[in-house]
Length: 225
Image 1 (cartoon, rainbow, N blue to C red):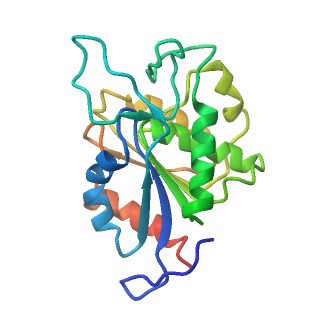
Image 2: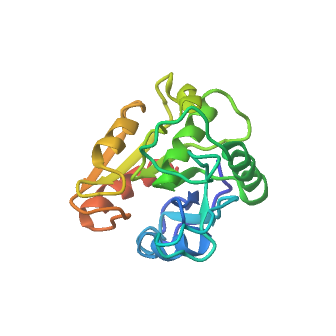
Image 3: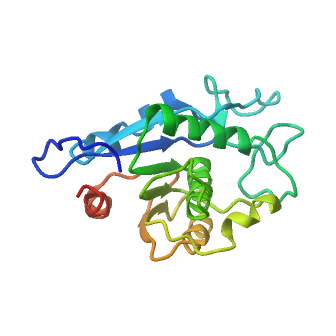
């Protein structure tokens, strides 16, 4: 889908991937977190990272130390502008603003062959996959990479999971992840048709060891034709 770019390994082109960070992160912090991943995949993929449009409020006194300019893709608690992946809620806020932001990125920075998301960003990517499948013209891409993803518990998001999602997908999660337990990521992967699932023994991060690269490389290469 993206314009051809020569790969440094002498075969095919680089795929262009839009990368979406997790909750309380931003473009800068996610660029640091994905440094090893981007280095290892530089012969196959070019990553374009953007910040979510929603500013996350300062934590209450005694809360976690605030990261610089923390951002999010939606709030499960609209009143307090907070978020928790396991929170079941009837209403949330900010999703439409984030959809508009990503659509603008497709127009301004695209085209993109795929989308990568981490944590809340991965949950958001699953929604983008559903919208693409439903014919939303704003989101044109060929594959998705979801790391530590989960299914939104907001009832108003239920429509994203009504039909099996056919977008080719790679799902990565850690057996010891205490932020997004592995069963939540498995639940999300089950909504995709023929998902490629990669597990690792660690926690809430993007693994880039030999075992994971055995899955990353062929998955990306299949879209470099």
